Every structure is written in structure tokens, then in C-alpha cells.
Amino acid sequence: MSGRVTLGMLLDGLGPEVVRPVVLPAGRDVPVGTLMIYDPAEPLAEGVMLLVIGHPPADLVAQAMKAGVAAIVTRHPIPGEPGVSLLLAAPEVAWGRLYTLIEAMLALAGSAAPSEPGDLFALANQVAARIGGAVAIEDLAMRVLAYSTIEGQRIDDLRRDGILGLRVPAHPTHAEEYAAVLRADSTIWSYVPVECLPRLAIAVRARGDAIGTIWAVEGDRPLAADAAEILAEAAAAAAPHLARFNLAADQVRRRRGEQLGALLRGSGHLEDLAAALGLEPDRPVTVVVISHHDGPVDAIHAGDLLRTAFAAYRIRAVAGAVEGRAYGVAATGSGAPLLRRIVEDVLSRLGPGARAGIGRTAPELAGAPKSARQAEAALSVLDGPFGRGAVGRYEDLAAALLLSELGTALRGRPALTGEPLSLVAEHDAAHGTDYLQSLRVWFASYFDVPRAAEVLSLHPNTLRYRLRRISELVDLDDPDIRLALVIQLRLRRTPDRNPTPRPDGAHGDVERHGTAD
Image (cartoon, rainbow, N blue to C red; front, side, top):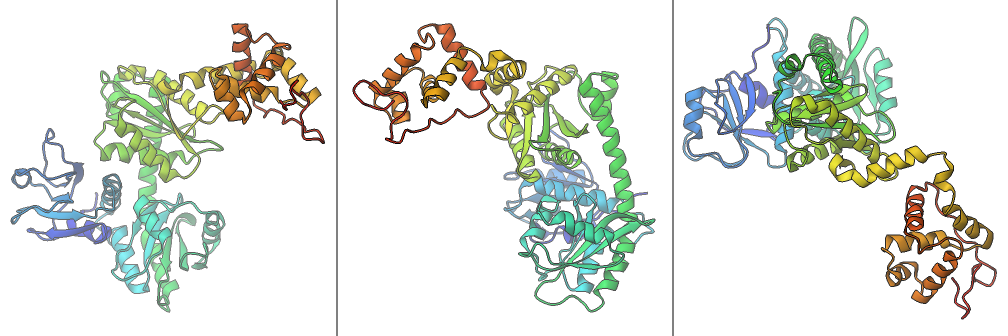
């Protein structure tokens, strides 16, 4: 049996810096069941917390009262005396993050059984009041499950970013810091990162196994003398909550990952998978894949971020972890600006090095496997020498995909470094010239000699002389030779050798009128 989540519990958990009440005509004990973003085409329901992006329509309050909406959250005051609870959202908190915060609180607070003391947010506030410092409760993946909102208690940027992102920001000291907490049998002080406030921490354990941590920030005043005992009590109280939440969340993620993997592989019954994942078989879908350019990404966390972001913007989608990567299947077009914005926001919260590939939009759900392979191909390009940026659409990477496939096919084969390129490279090595760089710039300038000469800081006649000398090695008038050189140079992974200057400052080849080449 789930616990009863009330408007007051959410307000206490979010804190006035995130959401503040304007009017509560039915008090704080109004039950909240679900969360949704207002859409005129969608019917309202009893117990809904309604996020209204933009100015609320004139008849919204009447609709909300009739439907039994629990509360309206907006950034724009509603004139008069609304007959429904009205909350104002802080302008600096993005709607997507606010949705994520409230959704997490509903899941956590609602998981508590009636026989157990309070939810995790209430527990965090109780401990913070007793201990004299801001408190956060985290799982083993450093996701912030709950935090205190006691007025006047000081927090630092690390804690603030963790609250807004629902995850502790990455820092080089975290691995050692968290390992020390999880090894300890009782509370332990942490003074890293050095630029942050000191923290007293304790591991939350169930049957001897660590399942989370609790952290108390020491602000302007020392923590209570019995802070260690208070945190030990809190860890015992939090254990059943974290155990239940971790078990439920893991089961849901595992099942979703299995179903999502089957969909992306094209195995299983499509109609059953569509029903289980909440997708419509006959609607177009686009696949997104997220990974890290130099190692595995936290696919579970990335999948959670994608899922909540899609839900926040009312995009029908499924997301999860499959074979170490995060995948999303969204019922939207690959070129939709909102899709790119969602992906970029998720990457920003995963830290530097995160990359995302976006496949073509499949006309129906059965095309999801093909869109997934395209997204993976786009991702591989971003991680290679032809990639640019952190997000790549398959449609936008046609040239890079071709070059990448050519490079893979020719790797280790003589054609990649052989003639005609080798003839020019051997001349550079023997005579200290820099013909390869001259060709590279000339090609990049679309064979425009004055433009290429400007890039090379040469007189145009000097570059023309170089090209004549190169033509003695390879036939630059032959379009096939030019094309071969362009491909070989583009696929060349090692940098061209810089010419070795002579003691007199000249290079290996000198023009007849004395200008260095």
C-alpha cells in the first residue's frame, strides 16, 4: 500500500526557493496523485498537480475546480481569489527540472507504507532541524533522492547543483570520498572538495549492505554535539525507504531495458512491446542513443534523464539503458528543435564527453531498429576524426559517415597511404618541402590559388610555382588524381611532417626568382 502524498509534503520538500504557495483554499492536506503539464487538448483529472507553461487561460481555474485538480503551478499570478491551490514556480528553475523534482518526490513520498515514519523529504527536514545543517539523502549512484529545506541553513554550489540536477555533480575527489563513507561503520567527516563546506556523512545499510548515504553540511555554525547519533538514527530510518525505492526502481528499469532492447533489435511481438512501452505502432518515431567519447556513460542515469525530460514536455517516448548505452525512442521528428534541446540538456547534466546520435525518423514503430542503427552510426562519427559537436543527426552527417566508412575500409591497406599521396610525401621527407600542406589548403580553398596563398601566407605566384613542382610528381590536371589526393589527405590520421628549415632560413625548393616555396 502506498503512502499518501499531500500538497504540504511537496511544498516542504521543494522549499520556497523552488515553489512558493500563493493561495491554499483547502489547506496543505490536499492529496496529490499525479503530475502533468497543461495541454488544452488533454482532460484534467482529480488530484493532478498541473504545471502551466506560459500565461494560464482565463477559464483554467474553473476547469481545474470542476475536475478536482490538486494545485496549479505557474510563473504568472492569476487575478482574483482562485478556488484551487495556486503555486508560483521560481523563474530560474527550468520546467523540465521542476517536473523531474516533483516526479521524484511523488515516487519517493508515495513509496512509504503508512506504518513507517514519514517520507524521505520529511526525514531530511527532521534531521536538518535537529543537527543544525542542511541534509541530503542519496543512493549509491549519487542521485539525490531527498533534501532538506530548513530556512537559513547554508549550502554551497555543489549541494545546490545536486538539488537542481537531482544528482551530485562530478568532481575528481568523489570516488575516494564516497568510498571512505561506504567503508566506515559510523559517521565520517569529509573536507573535500576543499572549496566546499565540510560535511558529516554516513552510509545507509540494509542487512549489512550499503544502499545509500546521508550528508549533513556544516554551515556558519558547528553541527549539533550529538550529530553522529542523529545521523545514525536517520540512516536506520531511511534504510527501508531506500531499499524499497532501489528495488522498485531497479525492477522497473530492468524490465523497461529488456523491452526496449527487444524493440531496438526487432525481436518480440511489436504490438505487445508497443503496449508495454506506451508507444503507438503506427506513429513515426526517432531513436536517440547517448554514450561517452572515451568510456561508458552512466546509462541508467542518462536513461532516467531522457525519460523524465520527454515526460516533462509531454512527448510520448520510452528511454532506458541497453548494453551500456542510454537509448530513447520518441514519437517526434529527428529535426524537431525541442528534441535537440532535450538531448543537449541531458548531455549538459552528464558532464563533458557525453555524446548523442539521432537516427532518421522511422515512419512507424517497426522502423525503430533501423533508426537505432543510424543513431549508433551518427554517434560513432562524433567519436571519430570527422565528428564535430556533441549531438549529431544521421541526416546531417552524410559526408562524415562516408569518410568514416572509407577510413575503416582502407585502414591498414596500401591504398590509404600509397600513390599518388606517397609520391608527394616522399618528396617532402627527402627535400624538406611542405607540399602536402600546400595541397591540403589548396583543396580546402576549392582550388582558388589567391585564397589558398593567403591562408598559407604566401604570394600567389609562389603557390603557383609549388603546384607546378607538385605536378612534376603527380598529374594535378587529372581529376581522378585530384580526387584520390583529396580522399587520401582527408583520411590521413597522422599530421603532415613539418618541413625542416635550412640554416639560411630557406626550404628545400626555391623559386627561380629567389622566393622560398
